[in-house]
Length: 203
Image (spheres, rainbow, N blue to C red):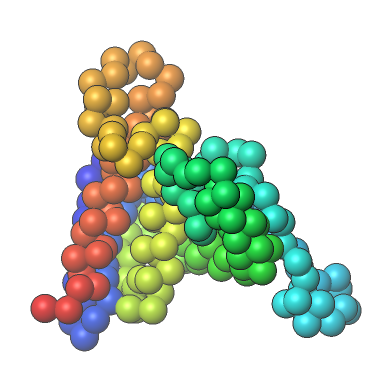
């Protein structure tokens, strides 16, 4: 896979994608949205304020990919604390999570679905067999940047990539390894994310 974001005159970013790349990226974004889940939405006809003030979960997600997307706020995963500090950090993280995770899930899911909708529009307007050019305004590009980052975090968790390990050893996996497609997607997304950051940085 290839491709990189290029800056647009006046701000924003553009990316050329062929049909296969559109399909892969759309599938990944849909899987991310499904992994995150819909969040707590108000019942049809209900008061939206009910969802605004609804309590979220107080414990970290059991799924490693979700735990990477929604980490504890007051304790790093590998941080060693004494018993009293551990209890204080755990209680503070639980309280913070209870009031923020539902909204954060909704925003992350919306970012992923923004990618899906943009790719659907690109696919429908592209000529058969010819690459389509995706053009993103600055605000839309920020939604994409968040979604690309979340995708890499989720895939990295599945591949057991850590902060200390950039996953470079995974590139040496044989093609027969079932993880190889996920590894290639992980590094492709990293390239997209890096070039999108570069286009959004002020000169």
